[in-house]
Amino acid sequence: SVGCCGMQEHESFGEELTMPETIEDDLPESEVVRRVAFDIGSGCTKCQIADVDVACGRIIEVLYGIEVPVPYSLDWKKSTNGLLSQQIQDEGLRVLNQLARKATCHGVTQSAAIATEVFRKAANGAEFLKRIHNEIGLFVQL
Image (cartoon, rainbow, N blue to C red; front, side, top):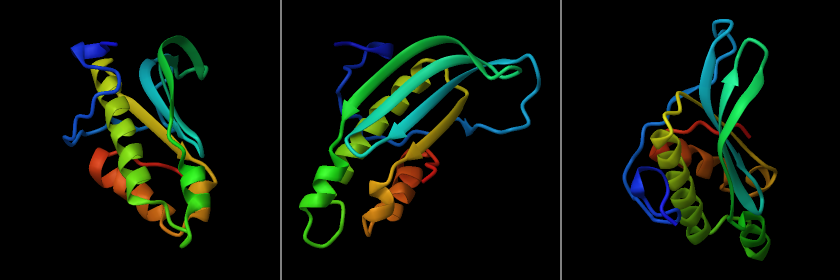
């Protein structure tokens, strides 16, 4: 299906993006901001874009939400060397790049991302999260 900015939902873009600033604790009161949150899980990557009232920490409106299968854990468990394969890393980056593009199209001004246990267990998990930061501009908390 065609998404924001007339792009295909699962199209690969391959160009670098600059993600909005990371969420900070000292935001002004009574401000509504558009945020994107990424949950890079063992079996899928979740993304939610919402308008948030930072004064009370409440979501005002969810504008977009999606869950895209990316089987990191299965890939790692099949590995004989404890590494995430280049193929799963490339797939994960493609998905995140696409979701970052969607966030940009929605006018997101702040971002946050977390990653789950498989990235602690995989010998190259932390390196992959650095790659996400370098290629997409998204800081991911482990």
